[in-house]
Length: 159
Image (cartoon, rainbow, N blue to C red; front, side):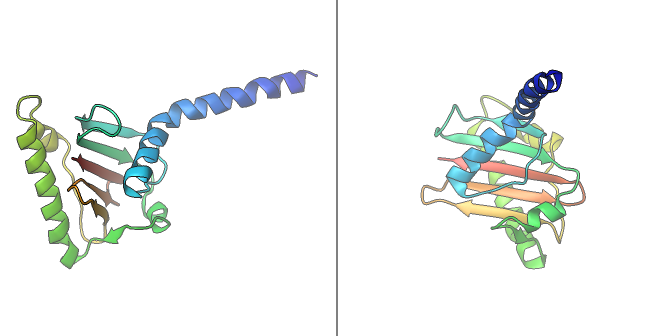
């Protein structure tokens, strides 16, 4: 009898704990999947560098950093990730610079985004991966994985 009571209490508490820990990831992952078809591996730590959107589906920009223990194996299973090689390196750099420049210029009055990018540098190297999708309204997502730092940097520009 006591075992059943303990099990009936423990399982719901574990489920609630799981939801609390992963809520930020799940809510963000659902939005990414709906908007972009983008899937990031599960993480319990999403750092929001900035978020200028006021709810779904408003315009604005977001910059998130997802931290992992090991990212390489998890990305092999995800679709749409492109290896960063010598040819793609310039493309990724151009997309990143455009996001940084446009975000800083559109948000001059509210925050110093140049400082935020300096404090949270997006780093990558050959053999890392990226995901980029551009919509007809010029909205886009840019995600860059860094295997050495075990991070994924996700930037959204929604018009």
